[in-house]
Amino acid sequence: MDVLDWIKKANKFDSNKFLDGFGVEIIQDENVIDIQRQQWGDDGKDSKGSVIGFYKKKTEELSGGRKIAGTPWTLNNTGDFWSRTFLTAAINGKDLLFQFNSTGINKDKLFETIQFHGEITDPDTIFGLYDFYQKRFIKLIEPKFVEQLNNYYDV
Image (cartoon, rainbow, N blue to C red; front, side):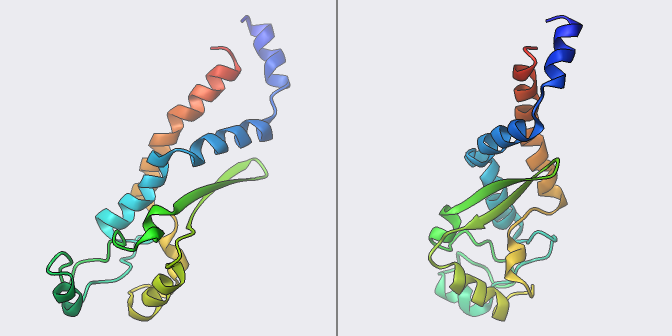
């Protein structure tokens, strides 16, 4: 492809169509969704970087020591909430916005527990990534973005 062909193709570029296709590819990638789970499991933090809550002595006793009093909640023993976590993508102007959520049947009960016993006041903030995990997210999706652009331009 010469420069003139490239310019013609660039003039026909439909950013919404491109972003839509890219978004579909990303939301279907379990490795991308796992970044949210890693944030919960490794750090027990919400989208603002705040600890969601801490295990109490009673939880340590009931779990047989698998959960240690004073350590952050990891959310990895939350039933289908964990396994049914998903990612959506929506185009907003020239931006592609990603949002995590879960269809787990115990989501309401979990949110109630977070609200009454957790360290954060808004359970909805558990969805989303704080800085460290945002960078991991970008590092994971960036090559896919470049690859799709290269495919579009036959590079």
